[in-house]
Amino acid sequence: MLRSLPALRTIAALLLAGALALVWALSAGDLPIPFSDVVGALFGGADGMAASVVRELRLPRAVAVFACGGLLAIAGALMQVLLRNPLADPYVLGISGGAAVGALGAMLLGLAPWLVDAAAFAGALGAMLLVFGLAHGDGSWTQTRLLLTGVIVAAGCGAAVTLMLSLATDTRLQSMLFWLMGDASGASRPWPALVLMVVGLVAVLPFARDLNVLARGELSARALGVRVERLRYLLYVLASLLTAVAVTLIGSVGFVGLIVPHLVRFVIGNDQRVLLPAAMLAGGTLLTLADTAARTVIAPMQLPVGVLTALIGVPVFLFLLSRHPR
Amino acid sequence: MNAAAEFLLEADRLALKVGERWLCCEFSLRLAAGECLVLLGPNGAGKTTLLHTLAGLRPPSVGEVRLGGRPYAQWDALAAARFRGLLPQQQPDHFSATVLQTALVGRHPHLGRWGWESDDDVALARAALAEVGLADIAERDILNLSGGERQRVSIAALLTQAPRLFLLDEPTNHLDLHYQVATLELFARLARGGRGVVMVLHDINLAARFADHVILLDGRGGVAAGSRDEVLQADRLSHAYNHPIRRVCGDGRRVFLPD
Image 1 (cartoon, each protein chain N blue to C red):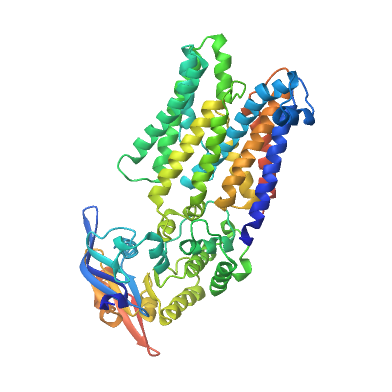
Image 2: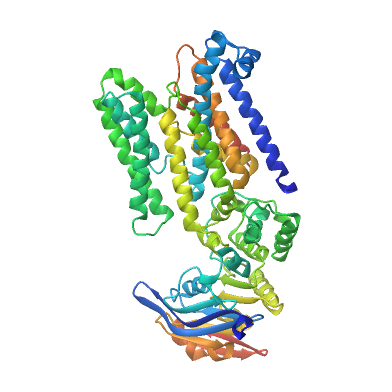
């Protein structure tokens, strides 16, 4: 237990950072709200405009963004182990492509927002089943084949998305582009995503040491008693579901799922027992910061959050990469 | 206790087929504690496939493999991992980890689902690293190691696993001459201490030096299994490797040389 003490310290620090990011997200905006009023609105049952802005506008959005950041970071970390490839991200197997085809198709038809969400989720699950069926059809399961199938399905989805964009009218084009870049302004029902984020983490934590072994290679893992087949199903289904929920909620925010696991790995190493919870918290924090910046830096205009995650993430990543002892 | 339980590893009328090709016809083997078995044969003869079958990682095409007297089907995967350990051929590492962390992976089957490595586990891993001459670089990143050093990290992870039966796929791969002999002597010492060793080797002379039993696959389905002196005959080796091999005696040692 003593050996897990540094891990607990890391988690505690990240919890604090996440809480601070959420408070900033609730207080910053067109109407700046001081910290005490934020607390009052959340816990004191305060009334008035400031309180309702916090509770009804900013809280759902902040929670949605935090949950999506956490979901994408966990999904990315899991995909990297599943594919034994540091370049894997939650979208590499075509989940976001499928979601984009569904969502943009619904937008093209002018369907209601909840139907757009439903179509995005259906598209994500469709892509997941398609890739799984094609890559796993004969019962074998090689990483290269899975990766290749996913990349090809994603490319097909990309073509379909481009086609739909070229068919769209100008009025719909902007919302379609925002969806593609990741847009949190429409996120209205964030709590299921937050619950799923925690459930996903709890579901995978018992297997975290198995993942450490699997990262060494399939053969070693099997010889060390890891039930690799079962573990891969779990990783694939869980990572896909988490990604599908995040993409449905705020669109394909790029980069969080790729970069956050690496950032955390630079700082605390590749022990999945620490990496997974730390990546979840760091992903949520980073995306919350990015989204708050996206809606405040050039207010009243709002930037797509995906742009900000890349603008923040790239220099931070390159800085850590250059300092990382080789 | 039945008599079979005295053997760490038994194969009964074992035969292996990959696709439509038979790698080896039916043969049997028994390995008791304290013994060392070497698998020899030309490239593609099926040495690795045979080793993986003996490790319970693929089902035999014909026959049965028993570990500690029980077929693999009756073993829990983690319990089997505490009994036998495998040194696979080197696989590329993609994620950075320290040498010590990598050695600690060997403790996996000994820990419960929520278990965290204890100080005893760390001490075991450090002792294993010292055995392979890596104690000084325990905190280095494995991605920065040479091939030989990474091979020794894998050996240290296997020692940390502390199984009774070691299954080694070309343990001397990537190692320089000194570490080749040192590694085989290490496993010979472990065998004398009551463990069992099965290893795939390419070097006939190292096999002659360390093996008690030899299984020679000829790549055409033929198998010669028996004691070292029965199997390591110049004519048998020449046939299996499809290359003339001569036995030379000198200094009280026999050396096999390719013509």
